[in-house]
Each structure stands twice: as structure tokens, then as C-alpha cells.
Length: 163
Image (cartoon, rainbow, N blue to C red):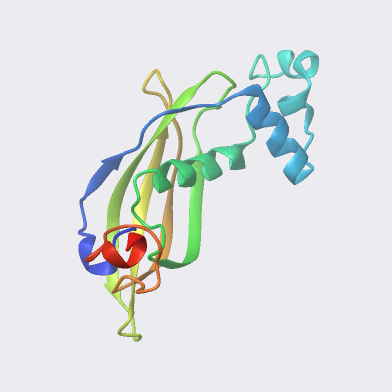
């Protein structure tokens, strides 16, 4: 179960496990989105661009960054809503790149609803060479308490689950 609003502190930093981007990832993303831009899907075309070969879709990196963050169990089950994202693309991500996300709590504030609070995360997507590929931030509306009906995470009494 993810963290609640009060467990986030400005300046906390987290590094995710790595994930290698595959040809299948790029092809699946093209299929899901309908974005078959040849810089992503046509090696002959892409070889003649400034990139010198195919690159992953920029938004694929955003999605993978959020997936990597989920592996840290920071917000699963405790986030109410994604309120906004800003994102910059610094360097291409290619099939074969192994990427990590560096996540830092960059902001936090209360809202009118006493059950919620806003947390802002700065996210940096870094490849295996230490090159920053993408940077961005996400504003999240977070719960102040864990949901009581969650079926995963910390249990006060496991007897009701296996009993």
C-alpha cells in the first residue's frame, strides 16, 4: 500500500529499479496509441534522421516512469487523482536502453478537504549511461489515511485474511 500525504516530506528522494526498453514496448505503444510515426517504426527512415535510428515515443517514457514509480509502492492505493503533469524531453530513449527514475518530493500542501493533500513529485528518467532522457513533475491528490478496504499492504491482523 502506498504512502499517505503525511508520510511525504519535501526533499525525500527515491531511485527506482531499472527497466530495459524493448522493441516490443515500442511496437505495442504504437499499436495502443495509433502513433506509427516512422521515426519510431521504420528503421530505414529513422536512420536518415538526426537520431540515426529508431527511438521510443516520448510519451512511452512518461508511462514507464510512472510504472517504475509504482514499483516503489509510493502511491498505489493512496493516490486519489493525477492532477497534472509537465514534461521535457532531453535525449532519446531507444530499444535496449535500461532506464531508472529518480523521484523527489518537490512540493506538498494541504487542501480544503481534510481527507486529502497535494504532493508534487519531480521525476528524472535516466538511462544506463547516466544520461538524463526526460524530466518532469506530477501533481497528485493524495489520501491522508489508508483505505480500510484495501486488500494488500500492511495488515494489523492477518487472521481475517487466512483465518
